[in-house]
View 1 (tube, rainbow, N blue to C red):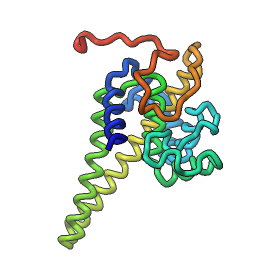
View 2 (cartoon, rainbow, N blue to C red; view 1 turned 30 degrees about the vertical axis):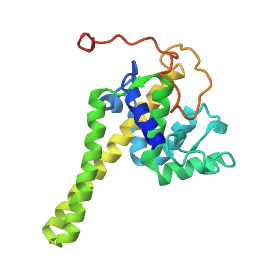
View 3 (tube, one colour; view 1 turned 45 degrees about the horizontal axis):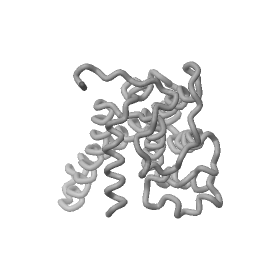
Length: 216
């Protein structure tokens, strides 16, 4: 119960972060079209590469789901981190993308915009709706309802993979910024795997973002 409360508090804390992503989800495809397409057709492979890059290619720092899930640190990651990461991205793809996102947000004090939150929430709601429709169609046994549920599930899958590919592109662009591909930056300190007990991180390589007038 205490762990769940800590995760909830950490999620709420991210909304008070003061930096923003270098590109939002709606502009991710324009920011890096090649990465977006690759993420769409081979999402787990891109997730593997991005997590490794987020760890500065130092796999001794790897923890399952970046330390944000109950299974973290209990999967023998220290013995074979590459195999564990490969298993994570293929068996728990959604969690692997989300964990890399949290890793970057906590390291660089990045908040998710309201627009991005709406897109991600829509994706989750559509998945739940598709699941409910499939259950209803299975119980009722109506052929037309079954076809409709399959269509909704197909649309839900398309939205899911599209949003995930844009999120991964967003992460890649952010790390391009971190690594100085958009200009010189300050090198960040050594990364910590789990940040549940970490206070709001300081500005690391990012100038403070000016708050819009309507936020004041």
